[in-house]
Amino acid sequence: MQEIVDDFSLSTLLRAMETNVQEAWVCLGRGLGAEIHNEPELLWFLSGIPFHLANGIVRAHFSPDSEEEILNERLKQLTSYGVPMAWLIGPSTRPSDLGSYLERHGWSPDDEAPGMALDLHRLDEHLSLPPRLIIEHVNDEEMLKTWLRVMVVGSELPEEGLALLLDVVTRCGFKHDTAVHYYLGMLDGRPVATSLLYTGGGVAGIYNVATVPEARRQGIGSALTLAPLLDARAWGYRIGILQSTAMGLNLYRRLGFKEYCTFYAYFWSGEQ
Image (cartoon, rainbow, N blue to C red; front, side, top):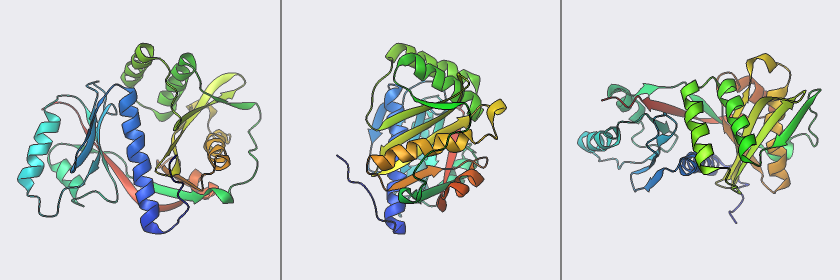
């Protein structure tokens, strides 16, 4: 049983926040059948699937005296696999200017994502759902496929990514993981929204909050964020965390989240 984090000091919060997102990405990698490489300088995974979120570097911590030649060799190794990759940059990433280095070597930056957290004890006791909305827990293969379809549309991810993810689910089925909880929002019986709760690093991490365009501005995103947070609190967690998109920033601020750091992602196309 992991130790629950209830210390709101900045150093503890940042460490827990990074651990949660790193573990969540590695969990995704395992679900895709990836090889996990936990090395002193890098934590990364490689599935070989030609989709940018299916291969990634989630932690980089090179020593201060590392020469650029060392970085060049590692970068050459990672890009030699010839598949799209994502590289997560967080508060503890070293060197601190690694993002600029990646850009100089052909990696494309995504929008920055504020790292946010809130005290779960300050959430409202009850979840008031928008009219006609029901939130269901995903617990089988077909529901997971539905969840993926809605998440991809709501997050405006490439359609080819959906095909690859659905293929993995077809081959591997639905795997229960005590740290991963999928939520599916149903409006008038139609799936319209998603969220995911990942309990790692002693905190409750919210991911993949997405609503299809035609169902937005009805409070559905708020409901799909609050439901897993209330579950996490009932299970004993004290801190909720997430990395916000620009679209969701005001929503999360209204819910009580505060910004503590910034995460960045850089993408490699897979082409040399």
